[in-house]
Length: 117
Length: 112
Image 1 (cartoon, rainbow over the protein chains, first blue to last red):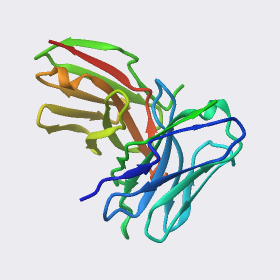
Image 2 (cartoon, one colour; image 1 turned 30 degrees about the vertical axis):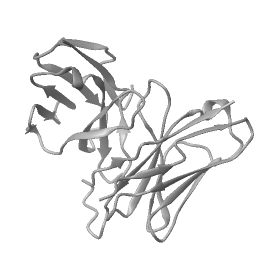
Image 3 (cartoon, rainbow over the protein chains, first blue to last red; image 1 turned 180 degrees about the horizontal axis):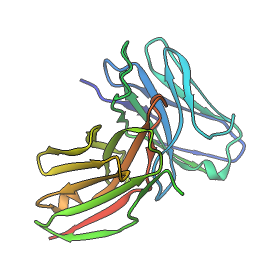
Image 4 (cartoon, rainbow over the protein chains, first blue to last red; image 1 turned 90 degrees about the vertical axis):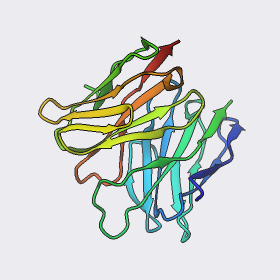
């Protein structure tokens, strides 16, 4: 049973560039959440996708956008990169299903480490 | 006031001792509580989830929740050097969908 996978593992970009990060959820999961984790900090919620729509969004600018595909995989896009966007980007998958109890557990992928120069 | 606060650490305990990690949260609408372990350079790994007041045990780990005091803790019995990691407390608010709010993490070091 494959867990959450993310690609690429590492990425180096320069200021002003654009980047796309990819995530495949754990088998059987239908919901993908993205988090940004700066060094020495806890993860910060960016947004969550369910049924190919953005269901919830954190306090991140519009430069951060995403997409979910019919197979539940997801992309995170960041435009006009800033030095402060350097961080570990984590994808977490969970199962919302039809009940949506609110107790869904999120399982994290290995992350993509982004460095902006 | 931060939404979720943890002891900044680092917390150092000898091998075999009990490690106690604490977390407080500010929103009384918090519904679900999670402890994740994160080794250096790796992603968070779920250890425990707890939803009701009281204790929940899983092997050497015990999570404790007190909603009246807005406090959740994690006890690690018989601590091992392999338990050395950063422990993240995460909270989900009621009717806030899937968003998890994390504390800054507590670094635990278990000395042989």
